[in-house]
Length: 105
Image 1: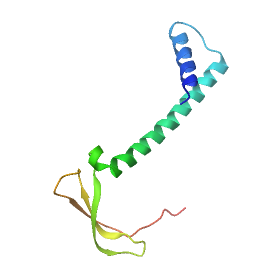
Image 2 (image 1 turned 120 degrees about the horizontal axis):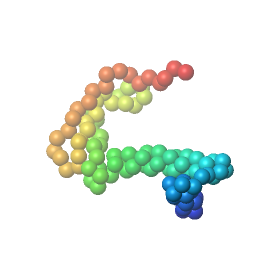
Image 3 (image 1 turned 60 degrees about the horizontal axis):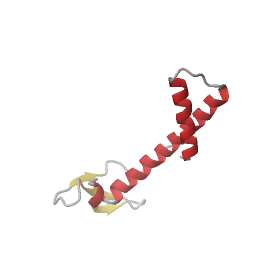
Image 4 (image 1 turned 135 degrees about the vertical axis):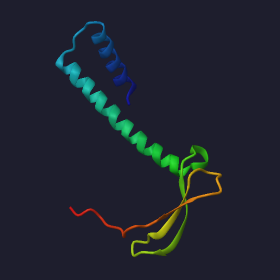
């Protein structure tokens, strides 16, 4: 988020906390700043999730460590093995319960 926008939103906040009022354009400005911050938060959470599962040795997150069985027409295996954390010897085995299906719009 642009630091200038963030600083202006903080000024508006402190102005209202101390008894001041805001004009409609000030409120509109704050709403736009909040929407921008929300979009950045959503993006950050997505990127964090990708990082957690792509760097398990650093993040401690689970990761797919193997596969088994035949592959279907989409290339998906019958089973996958999931290790709960990097450095552990064990894994959980997950078996496919149904074939791939896309939502019908």
